[in-house]
Image (cartoon, rainbow, N blue to C red):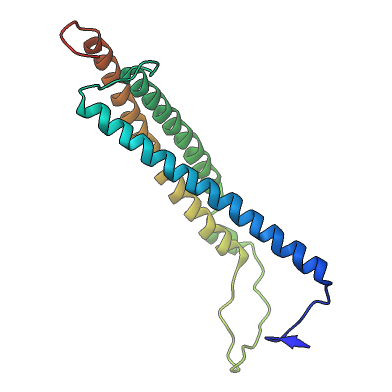
Length: 176
């Protein structure tokens, strides 16, 4: 008997029960993980709020703030370099595609075809489509290179701030 245009599978009640049990277990596992993470974040926020009210700004065993800044700066520099390399590669691949004017001179004309209303549709040349994809690759490559350069400068600035934070974190007048 079809249900919404689809045939109903002939499964045994054991198969249906096993599938429902598996779905419920998956829901409990994922939902439980989300619930535990939410409670952990809520308790962590309450702990940090209580510590700040008492004047404690750093906990024992935590890395210093300058080290976190240095790690973020180096990660940002690495991401910027990766974007520059990938963008330059995409631009080079797109730049290597021959322009369609020279390619169409060597291509035979496509056979005539009639459309549904009796008119011929405009011919779609695979060479022109390839050139248009290459232009998109070049554009995306240039965007990636630009974003990579921005991230490279951002990472360099973050790394420079980490050096400054390290210098002023060890002065005797600042609380740790």
